[in-house]
Image (cartoon, rainbow, N blue to C red; front, side, top):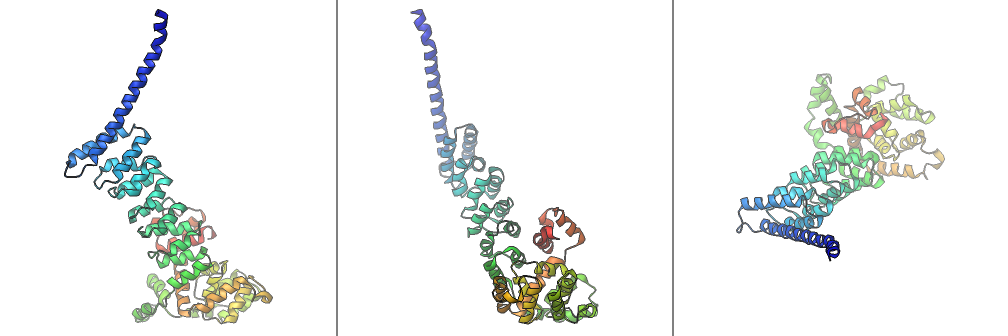
Length: 409
């Protein structure tokens, strides 16, 4: 009997322990439910102070509670219009299976807490936040700062997401590695000309058409409003560099007459004829100078694999169709024999035929202004060394140059 009683003791102790654990589990679950009930009461039934006290107690228990209990609480709290902020924040940065209810549906969670969830929660949290019915500019800046293509796609497809200029700059930079985002970004009304015309350099054929259609303008109002300023700038002998850059963008004349006097070629056409015989850096530089653009801009245009930018150069400078053909051949894109069957030249010819001279000038002048006006030797060095620094501190033109040239400069 004594032996039998001794043998039974461990079994009895185990049963008691299991019973206690079950009791503790039921008590915890019940307490979480009751506190959740209090937190969810309408304002007429509970004071704000008591609601927040109940929320604080609930938070303390939930930190160590099982995930299943936290999921249930998150679903209930997400529906509240006046949930305790600290409780929402804790649930929002929890594991995604717990946080998803709050991130998707909570109308009372603040932007600050959503930003915290984006920063500390992880990639899955950002995907869910990007789908919310309303995404503020502050929040889109945080979401786009992580350079995640899948998050960007969801955000760009969300018509209620408000894109700040900083988030747009981040998205433009992301499109370099993920060109399929270009068409989504071009559908956003917030996109600015500086961003669209920068995007051009790695966009596909259809997106390039959309860029020209949207951002090429004739500058008539600019020219009319600044008509009398040309005489003022000329009287000052174009000594003011800031005024000179701006007026060079606005003026109607594209070719550089002063460059003709210094050039070994009598005209832009003569320089292209020489390029057909032998295209080298010197001839390419002369073509740029005579066209009224900097050699760095001309080099980028001549290196463009799509070719539409070459059509812009020719149209803006008043070249005839035969010189468009000559320049394409001089660039060694095709031979004279297969020119008409070359698909690349087909793209070039289409742009040349559909773009007006004045609009082509606008695009060409903008590229020249954006790519060369702020491209100092220091910025070139930083671009080569991949050490541009905080892009937020760059001007519009500096950022465009850094994005377009990358390691090319």
